[in-house]
Length: 229
Image 1 (cartoon, one colour):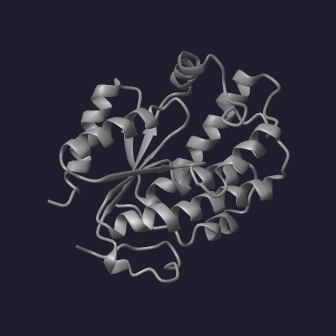
Image 2 (cartoon, helix red, strand yellow; image 1 turned 30 degrees about the horizontal axis):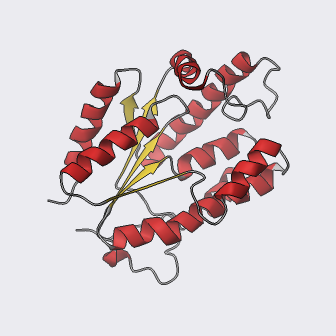
Image 3 (tube, helix red, strand yellow; image 1 turned 120 degrees about the horizontal axis):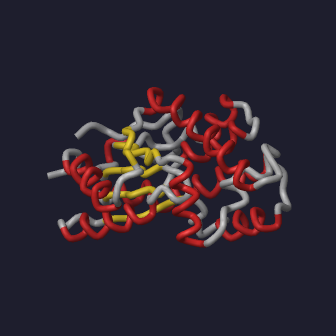
């Protein structure tokens, strides 16, 4: 078993050799089916006898409520919002991800630092500064990016909640006053950023246009090869 690696800095009091668990990340836009796949993978892994912990954006017990409130009220500036998200991630890293990996658990992350980085860069943040915020992030054992056509994303979002999300449509950026046009422009830019990150971070691209069952079987096959026996 090779020790876990970190992007820039090993967090204080963390011994990389002691992190025996596995970290798998599912990335993708709203409507890509990430959360459903996380649920199915959790059930499958637990059935196979693995202990599983789920993490994701805005799930920190310390600050998630403040992040959600800031989004809803649009009350803070872009730099503060990026720092909110970074704090949310770091709290989960310290208090959920690292302890779970130390205990030998499988950690499934419903999005990770890559979404946060892509969102910030698309909104004009300096890429080097954004990367520095997440220098203590653990390098996952695998990152699966659910690539879905924007048309399908729109259909799935309407099936789920009958509307498009303000932030996932990039309405704060000013692409268009029309939410549909803004959504297409924003998702195109987000996917462009993920394409740039693909080689640097070793994403495995998952065709998310297929049925949920087909995608699940694909993920299960890939993850099975990486599980501790």
